Length: 135
Image: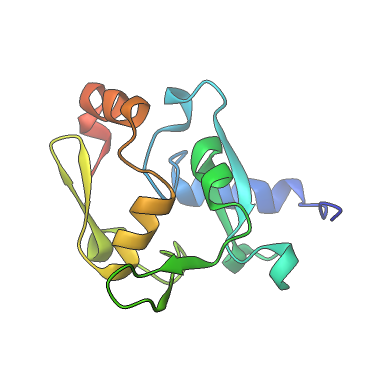
């Protein structure tokens, strides 16, 4: 699928709104060698538009883990659960930072943290060294 053009103004809006942090795991873009990129919350594959309310700033790792997925299965109930949506949800409603570990507070948080692998070794190392960046 061809990538749509995202204007310079829209790119700036997304980056500034995110304060140069990944909107999923809150890693500062400069803490990742590959930085962050603008991603579609609802992917183009699923009909998501290229508009400010469907774009998020995501580290490459979160973006690759998320891919075109919209959610995942709740292991306890077998139900499909959507991912955290940085445009509709507040991060602190679904996650909390416990030292350097991102703890899910809701089933949306649990599914998102599991699939996006928030607490992998590299991120834990970054989180321990940069805790002051987190809420």
